[in-house]
Length: 134
Image 1 (spheres, rainbow, N blue to C red):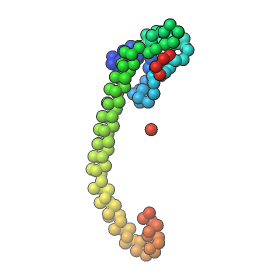
Image 2: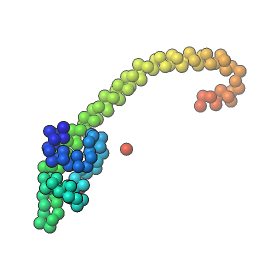
Image 3: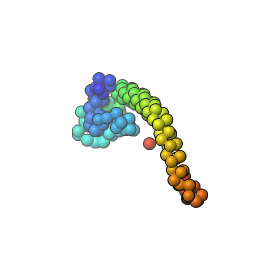
Image 4: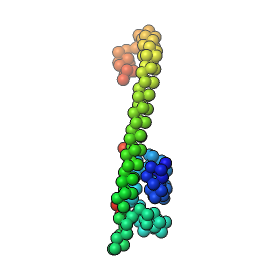
């Protein structure tokens, strides 16, 4: 999916970091930060994603940064939509169960009050108590 939306170099960059889920991607502060490490495994990705300056520093190409930002925004938006739907479903389930629970609680309170009439008032009250270069 990353390859289709952002591109193959971006997919390779995420795979090299072990970012395999939306959650890990959204919680990675800067996916390009790893490119600052001197590592032969990352050299092919660096050549794709970065420009090499005359002083041998690497600068992430703006297009790759924009692709990752776009992917981030899409996934964050979809994640937020899913959370909203789940919250609504949870509230609906809670509300649909609520009348049954309150009826059951009301019945059990009446039943227990008959049995607990001999409790002292003290006993009753105590029972109610989240880089750019490489």
